[in-house]
Structures are given as structure tokens and as C-alpha cells.
Image (cartoon, rainbow, N blue to C red; front, side):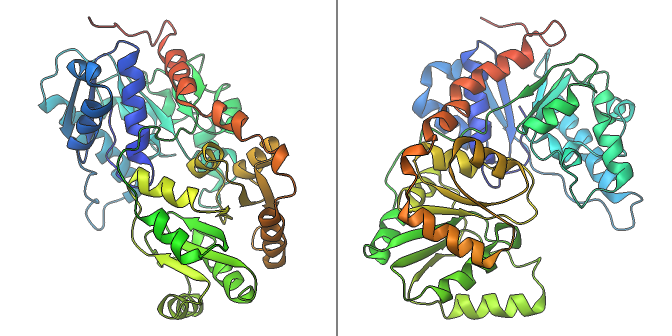
Length: 397
């Protein structure tokens, strides 16, 4: 298993995959930036599986040199090369399959399968998180979308199949992978947090009995944080309290919005609590979810699955999401909360009012959503991906 990134929920996804494959009887070697973390976790929660596990450090490759032709494609090629080099340096013997935990980094519309085969000598598969070609992502042009949706990179003779988080992508990829399995993976959460959290209790104390609306994770333009900041100021007289927790990422804001955000951060209203640092610890993240009454997930131009919906379902917290994409489809299907037109200030306000009063709490299918995105379904997804004639692995005693 290879995971060169360490942001968002990547550590949780890696640990979940390690657990599933080890419990299925496979030997697993993980390459990641902090190999001590999955090893310590496994020793603490599944010591009986440690004998079949090893781990090595692997860092995200450095950017390509300035002036490199086709830099984004060159960067993807560099990922394939350095991954192959890192694996080869460990003298692991025969390798049945390489699983790429964040396949997106390795996939590029102008990187054909034969070129991947030139740089990567191992059979491979992986989890494709954000296949924007199937939801008309604006960063992809018409040609890029066509190349990706036609399976151009997946024509590698060593690609044995692919996992996806998005139902829409599965339907399309099924037609392009020439019989190789395309498996719908659950968007799992870490079920093994351990220790004592401090952030959730701090938020509860600051709220002092008021109803909490929380925006948790990377605080960026994509998260709709500016829209929520404006709501905070407009609802100061209500019995509402707002939490912003995560790394503050201001890179995509224009100057006017940036000044507005900095004024807010430097002089927050009395109905606001902020923790402007990454919340990487699972226990701390979950404690913030549990301290909240509503999770604000009104993402802008975000078309894909979100792990926060699974956390919301597991901890039985309603969500407010923007319309038009995967998250909205799932919220409607399982009645997880309210769907609002993207950027609709008055719609967000009405949606929060509805959720905080929570008139439809009994209709929410939290259990159904959590079951669909459970660890047990992850086990089944891996079994499906690896059990076809083309992908069957040898289990080692």
C-alpha cells in the first residue's frame, strides 16, 4: 500500500485498508510519510496482525523543475517513478499487487497506460477519490474529460481494476475498463480513536448551552467558510453558536474577501469559537462533531464524496450541504439534513433554522448511511477487487 500524502483523512483511509487486507490473510507493506503511525496503531489495536505487516517511509515527491514541459503530467510520472524506486529499494521479494491509496495523484489525462507501464513494473490498483471527469469538473477541459472517461490511464496492462467512492464514476468506468473490476468503496471513518479529547469540551464550554453549528476541516474557500462567517454576524441575536476548526487556507480568496475574513478572524463575534489549526487527531475531530448540533458542509464547487458525511451519520448529526453533486444526492437519499442551492445566503439561513429546530429527526437514516460506509463494507470491497481471476492474490501463511 502506498500513501505519499498525509492530509485530511488520508491516515484513516490507510489504516482502514491495512486492517482489511491483513484480516483477509494478506501480507501488507505500507509506504507513507510517517510509518511509525500505522505501526503503533496496529500494535495497539490489532497486535495479532503485526507479524504480517511492515512499513517504510515514503514522502510525496518534490515538484518538477521550473520550465519542465507539461509539468502536471511530468509530476504524475515522477510519482510513478519514485514509487517504483521506493518499493524496489526495500528488496521485498515477489510483490503481487501495489495498492495506491490516493490514485488521483497518479492519474493524468495525457498519461496513457503504456507510458505508466514504462515507469512502473508492478501490477497495480487504487482508490480514485475525485474523478471529476464524470461530474464535469471545471478544471478539466473537454479533451481532458474525454481522455479520462475513456479510461486512457487505466489501459495500463498492469492495472488490475480500480476502486471509486462515487456511484456515478463507477457506472461510467464499468464500460471502459474492459472487464476489469470497478468497485464502489465505502467512505469509511476511523473506528479506533483512543485517548482523551480537549477540543470538544472546550467548544461545549464556550457555547454555554447554545446550539452549535460547526465548520470542521480545512477552512478554505471550497468549504464555504466566508458564507458561514456572514451568517454568524447576521444571527448574533439568536441562541446559536458557531465553531470554525481547522487549518485556515486563504489562498483562493480575492483581496476583498480576504480582508473580510481577516477582520472576522482578528475580531470574532461573541457567538464564535475558533481553533485555526489542523485537526489531524481522529479523537479530537470526533469530539468536535459530538459537541456540535449541525455540521456545516456547504462546499462550493465540490462534486465528490465527503468523509464528513460518514462521521455525521456515525455520530447522528444532521448536515447542511450545497446542491448539485454527490453529497446532495446522498443527503437526499438518506435524509441526512438539508440541501441548499450553492451560495444561497437566505437558503443557508433557513436551512440552519430548520436543522436546529430539527423537525424531521426521526426520518434521518443515519444507521443506513453508516452501514453502507462501514468497515465491513470495506472488507467486502477489497474482496471484490482482489477476487477476480485477474486480481486474485496469494494469501501467505
